[in-house]
Length: 266
Length: 288
Image (cartoon, rainbow over all chains, first blue to last red; front, side, top):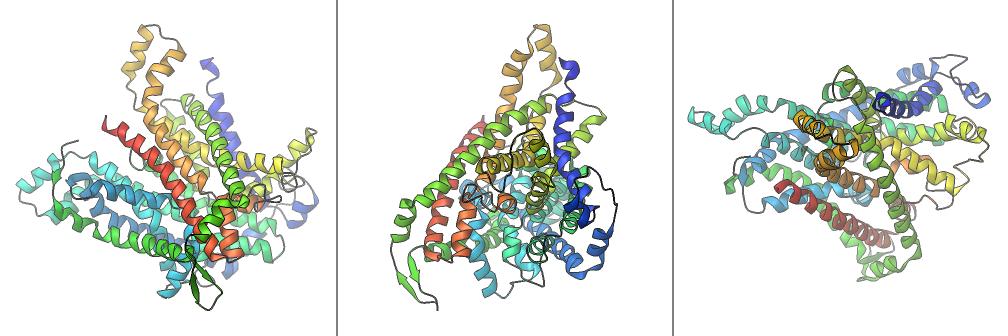
């Protein structure tokens, strides 16, 4: 029985890879081959779809736009979350527990509920169609997430570290920046990764808050699908490229992913 | 964990977070509340309507149908993903080079933009050009998710299982890894059967991570929008129109702001209420 145990994860991974392989397969086919014949691998291998994406500004700008707001969002979220997470992990203060839950409720808010008011709010403050709008809007769920993850990591650091530093004559900020932040470097990395990831995969808000100048790659894809006919090969190539950043960074955080998803609570 | 010290100045550390989150959460929420009690005919002219929209939504068969579909969907994916995820986690290697390979490959679907997930499954399941569509039709089953409600449900659920089971696997695996080897050795000495090991050693350890997994999967599946929207567009007919899809149709498609706002609030309250229950369970566990 336990001899065949490896079969379960293997079959599961095969199931996971199959649709990804199909996307990859499509991305190397010509439109004619996709619509004309059913083939398990490209007969008429072409990189034309990728060439189009890398040479056409409406395509590659989509990637730049996405990466811009994602990076902005991750840096803002983690920067403001660091002191807050420290406060939650070290101190007891009026309303701390309620506040902590209130933060989590924002992770629970369906983006569909906020789409229209967000559009109006960011139009009113003049940020509509800028990367800042999306970066700030994604803060709605990413800041609480970062606070939770960092709080989880910080609570794992013994309080004696803080006390020893104060005895040694460190001021709070010097201790926080020189000693505490390096100690929880792994937690910061994980928080950054999760902010990056949730901002990267979200589309509803990103699409609502942009029109031309800051349009994310994912929105470029949906609009192409509806306006320029059904260019499946191009769509598949663009989709394949959106998987690359995640696949690239995932290796570094593989052992912490569970902790991040559990909001720092495993 | 050492006892926390009471320090009201800690509030200063939290101000930036509160300011940013409140800007994003409270102002839009108040906009929604504002719309939910008024009627507008455009040009920014509003009339007070009281709770009319709430009554209308709560009595509308359309809302009942979406809500029912939403609960059915969430219930089905939880019933599949939680046991399936635990089963995969239990059969994963406990150490060695394959652990990293498994973790990286399994986490991959979690990092794909949600509309790409929808588009990918669309291409994968189409009866004429998709691998899945071809295989199922090749087995002699008539399958076309753009025409048949049952096939659309099947595809949407399979897509969600594909997309999110790994989350359960990763959490359960992290929980299992926190069990010291000594526990297993003790079980071996006592001659415990695999089922007993699972029931008395592994399951209690998994309780906490599984609460988190249920909480996360519940809230995310309850808010699901992009993936089914790209895959089926809520169709055929309205058969896969879940709450978020219906809400966006009313708010941005028909621009019925009053009913959409009232529905938003009811929707949000349902999510909040159920999450609060899970959260209380989770925290009760943590304090032990």
